[in-house]
Amino acid sequence: MAPQDISDGAPLQSWLENRITGMSLDAAGLVALADLKIIEERTALTGSSTYLDTFVLCPGMHRQQHATGLNFSEFPAVAALTSGYVFRVENPATVFFLQKIGKTGHLVNAEVLQVSSTKSVLTQFRSAWWSPNPSFASSTSYLATVSLTMLAIGFMILIGDWWALAFLTTLMLSRSCNIVIVRRRSQVGWKGAPEPGVKGDLLVLLSQDRWIRMKGNVDDLKAVLSGQWMRDMTFTERSMAAIATMLVYIDAALASNAQQTGKIVLMVLLLVSAGLLSFSNDQIKTLQMFSHSIRAVGPAKAYKRRRDLADELIKETGREDWAVRLGMINTGSGSKTDQGVQVMM
Image 1 (cartoon, rainbow, N blue to C red):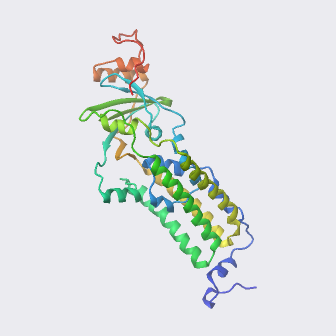
Image 2 (tube, rainbow, N blue to C red; image 1 turned 120 degrees about the vertical axis):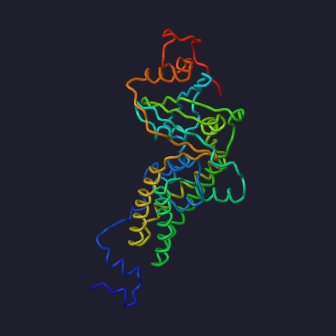
Image 3 (cartoon, one colour; image 1 turned 60 degrees about the vertical axis):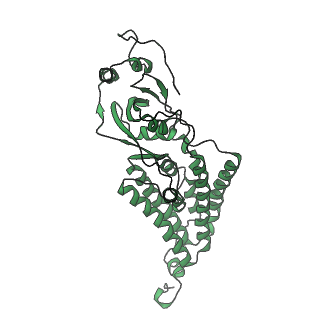
């Protein structure tokens, strides 16, 4: 039987169905359950989540609360080159970003700045819906992901595929739950005693011999290094997160009820959105968190061995106690400092 022409008044859905034959996509909804970390990485790089993220539907979206594990349990040692104190980076999102910009055998310089300290209604509204990013490519690909979801919703309404539309709205409901939880958890908490006007100079020793030198005001450094990024979930938040996760699994099971055209659109939406958001994350060169930013400045400098780095910084700072406490030099190599590690919170 020859397929009907859409110009003859046949519904768009029937016209498309007649052209898609011999292909079964009953398990298309399972794509949403792929264990990707794209949403988690986006949460860490932006420091929180915005309500516009509701329209960002990618595989692995049900794992957003696991973003605190992106540092792979690494809490690197860091030394204050100005005072000699040694402590740890306690913020997993900051560690993840430093791992991202670090390079084995190289020293990377990073700058920490305060982005905004205003608390106007307009500023709060804008931050609730949009994460500022200086990268045009990152912002464009992110908006393309949002637009794809909106187009998919309109297309499902146009062809009358209500099961596919229900699939999308359920995923958006799940995303909304996780967004609310993330925003509640990522509030500014304890950051140590304020030290206004004091400049800081830190050396971070990451795994795989990656070295980061961070400069900025001490209070700005504390904002992104100390305390908690996302606090532990309350019972209510854990329950909401569990419901959001179950919605994704139930949604994947019910996706088989959608029309063949709808299944294809859903699968393409999830896959293309994953690619666009992954590209957007890769183009983010600045970490945003608690109204502060971290970005790499200048080219990375290579060293043949770690001792060369230590000697250069000792000469520059005029003190070696931090190098002894980090284990970069031996106490018997001319050090005049006390042995041991001094930890300051």
